[in-house]
Image (cartoon, rainbow, N blue to C red; front, side):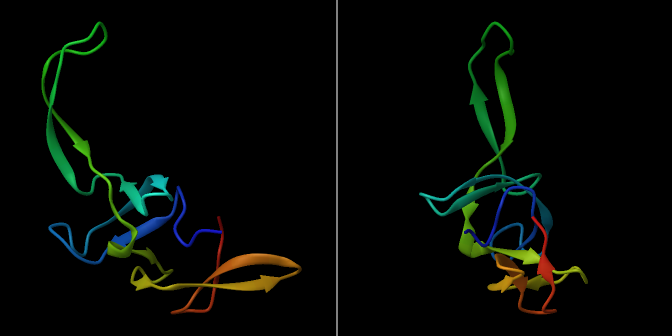
Length: 102
């Protein structure tokens, strides 16, 4: 079970987008990286295809999971722990002790 999953609200801890928050769009567990909507936006040159024009396109680049933290109910970053509730392993916010639904 992963600490950060697709659909989680996260806060950026370091880098050019420090303090900003967004939703996880994609997680790459083998590379320990995630793509967050609206965060770490880079410009890429796009070749023309049948569906898309050529030009410079803005897109989100992946960032390392260590630079992200789950957003707690009060909007601040929290670490994630695990607990067994009703026979199921669930994620728990260390800051508030609440179960993170996912």
